[in-house]
Length: 376
Image (cartoon, one colour):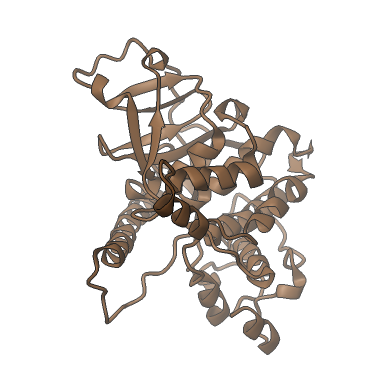
């Protein structure tokens, strides 16, 4: 197995759930591309809704029209298809099919929707050799992080499959299978596909059916694949807010959803603290921006006008794969673009000029009455 060189290159982590995170990251990619930072990435690690964005970026990477480290076709190839996807509800139809139809799982319907609208019949072998894309899920059988890459798919306990031809839509569906409703995803792997030199005793029984859930169950910032082998770590966090809730449902499905949101918040907080501690200790450089980060936290001139009440409302977009109004879709892209710009220009090494304006000027985030009301 090929091993990454320690502390080399720049990594990008995309995390958070649903269409909210997917579009927030689309805006971040837009600005990173303008800054010339996209072309230099060595690794892209993704989890949950971030994997939708990362999966399409990886699939289209070689056809982005690279000129002088700028992808001239990023919008047409990546941004616009993601905006289009977010105009369609795919979670409720998948859940209904999984409940009502025999031998149909919720995850398989999500996978089918991803394939139909974004990925077609692409497999992990359609990802580029560089940068290395790592789509993460959680192996519920071993409790370990499962990694989908072009080179292999594996966790450290059961071993791996070299050069897998697993559908890209399946990998993204597994990564974004938020429990309990969209989870799990079952990956069936022929015994002959596994690498023969893995000698962890007793693991053969865990290789026939690999049962996967959302990568955020284990690592909801997507840090683990990059934390020990990257010189610079850029983190785009599309994780939503856990609102206080006085009345908690007593039926187990809704109560379990609440439990998962609480666990998600705590894991995210721990990972965020570890990330920031690493920045402070000089273990790696980089930048962090989140969908709930106030833009004035970054001491940099020329940030785009973003009113806190407007961006807070955008951050409260539900963690769903439910159709969003076009206004909200464009606002999410604008917000990802703006806060990524502030975080990146806060780094002295960037030295870039402020942007001219939002990608979608008609959906500015300045708090004007019209935009605020339309964006509700």
